[in-house]
Image (cartoon, rainbow, N blue to C red):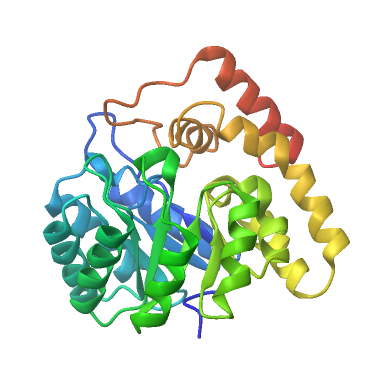
Length: 294
């Protein structure tokens, strides 16, 4: 059984203006997501700025999220690292905390061969019992997890169940699903192509857009699953200008600004991320208003 089906939010981490974690606002964001039909929460991923957190902060944020959600929907914890030992440690701790699944990114900067990637993910998976989603995001990591390696991992390792595909390469994704023979739970990592990914067999999306428009992102998936493909596609296309605005600068700069505009956080980012450019912020605000989320 898949960890979740539908729209999982790649949730932001709200900060106070001094850069410390604002747990009160984080709690509000979580409750708003659940109230608006989000199907899962993915915590401490790229959008959550986990790369700037200490290990203690990282685990505290996961713990808070798990306790706040209280089993109402699945919580998937980002526990990847470019150091295999660190990924093992974070994964084991997230399992103890009570996460429902793990999202583990390909090792970044030091990179690895496909065999090295296989060994990395297998070692992490062997250290825990939780279901694991691989996170394939070459634009961030400089490394592409090839379809054959994804299938090999999902077949060989019982608790590696699928992949968040943020390659944006539909042809590669189609190849993956053609050789997977049903062994890979696919999730779109790109908000602009949720419906195309669903048409290839995706279980849903791990979404930045869901921070701003949780109900609509859920509906893109639920309408598709109900067989209302035309309606799903119409909503997807309506969302494209907003999605483009949310990615006109490096994620999560725009989505943090969007959530500030909605009154859900201060908009504070941790360096090296910086304040959104004025013209881009104006564009984002316009698109939020057009889409009806502001």
